[in-house]
Image (cartoon, rainbow, N blue to C red; front, side, top):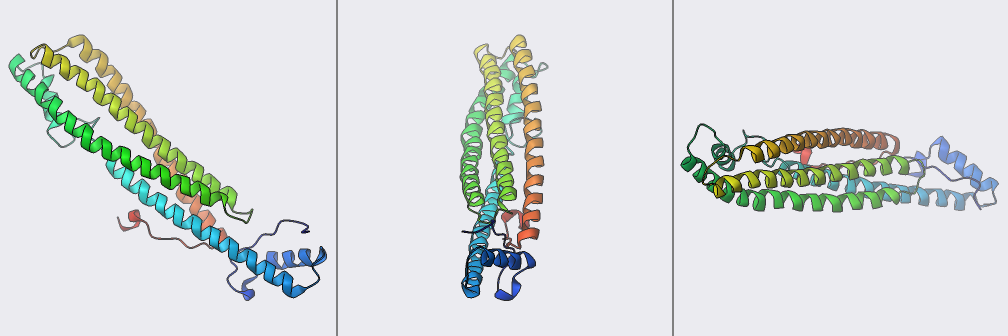
Length: 255
């Protein structure tokens, strides 16, 4: 019934119809719509639909930013750097201190095992929970991107959603790497405790090498996070400029 798909931009009032809208009206009239009034109403109806779906996407985008902000905060879990605050790290360091005594190392290892259980229960579970919430926000973002009517905008919105999915995947990978690093360190501490403070040289070297590789993998995931967030924000800026959609304030805006 219609010759070509229509493309509407920034149509708030009848006076705001752009040249492309006017060309669309001409196409509709040329293809059998005899009533200019009916054609005009159809055009405005399509514009309203575009505004609604674009606004839905903008709200979903803001919800994603909020979830990403929360996940970023809880991702700062002390699992890699000895300089992080807390009692776990000093105890861990003391447990493998070659200049210390067996008795002292045993005490440090015992304390580190206890502190590590608290760390994994509190910090890591909070991180995991935020990743799950982020995944839900991304699913909503994907759905809203695919609901945009105007064919001029979905490709941008879908790419934003795809990059958002990369963010979730990177966080999920980091969380698994944190847990694996914790497991490797716990194995060292357990051996120190079992051997009454004696340092397990071979295990320390083997697991230490694996932990270093995990650190490199975490850095790679963090680079993916940073790159994807830049693409997401640039993409939204481009979509906002082309469509005139409304942007909402996110948690990160106040920081």
